[in-house]
Image (tube, rainbow, N blue to C red; front, side, top):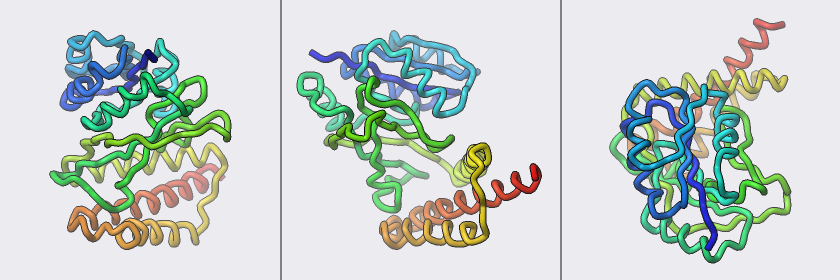
Length: 253
């Protein structure tokens, strides 16, 4: 029977981490939590679940998740954020893998709960995530803060799992605004380090397309006001990323 490691990174997650941990109990054979020096009850909650709790100052989203991945005992892992948990159908899918692992990784849809509503459309659903994989075949990559799992070999295969990763995202519009500001700044800095440019056409066209894709193509209007808000902010984060990148380029030229 194949053994699995559950891998999570945390920072001040006392309101959400217990639900995440509970969903992994009985599914994985160990839980590794790498914590960015939380000042709340995150550590004491984790210790109730007999996790391997490692404290590590935050290295960046991609870097911190790969640090955590390297602490897992087993090669086959289930990676979750602290505000995510496994649905019952997804639990059964993962249990089935323990005796039927075929591919290098497995993808699950992420179902987002936003300001009191499950979002069924926009670019938020189906939000496909590769979160169950062989860590000898893949690791975290991408540009901070938009991390994702990347295979080392382009020939690696992934299959879809039944069930959703349930994600309790922003609980207020002000929290959403704050995160958009934070993530757009991190993204601009990451792109600046890579020497990316921010031409005016991208500042205009990319946010415009982001809104059209989310609200019209992906039927965000069916999610009512929240669908509109998500679509506007999806455009806004791209707009902010480019103007902040442009500002960084100007300051350093």
